[in-house]
Image 1: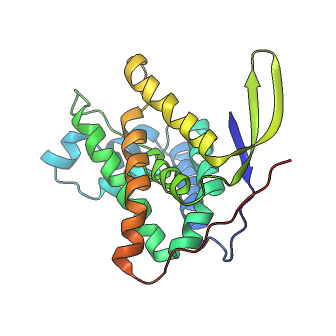
Image 2: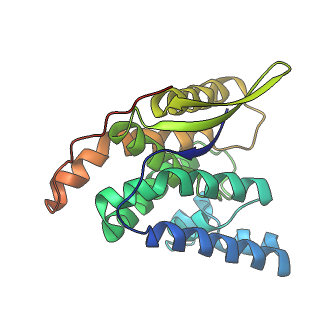
Length: 221
């Protein structure tokens, strides 16, 4: 299943979401122009860079580097679909902090389980996964226009957000245990998601600047 858009209007323009997407695109263009390997080595997050070289900036810089076009596209596409509503709820500044913490936490736990200390972790997946977790908590019934593939059948349908997001989460859990040969950081996806689902409430309570709004009810036809 591939989400195309959600039916969940926002009240404000998502400035931070848009800025994050633009920065990721610019960095990817720089990867094409210059050496991707050098950029990954310098700004990717690895156990060696963080704990031996003390390059703490890689905790953030790794989130803006992607391995290829599809890696970039799907991360940014998911962020655009789901991030604008979370930014609308939290406000731009709080959303940025929430997003960065999600990416940092997911990456820290992931690199502990990477055997080679020189291997770098790159991509926004951990942070985007946090957004998905928050979206599931705040808008579980929001309709998502979804492109689905089933055997030889292809179609479009609206499904509740919780169906798509839970399916996405279970796929990542399955792949974590049964796709050990992949270089995809499934654990980072899972950790980011759990953080977003559990701690979006804490963000509301911690900052104490906005109360929950009554969630919309949706009708499907």
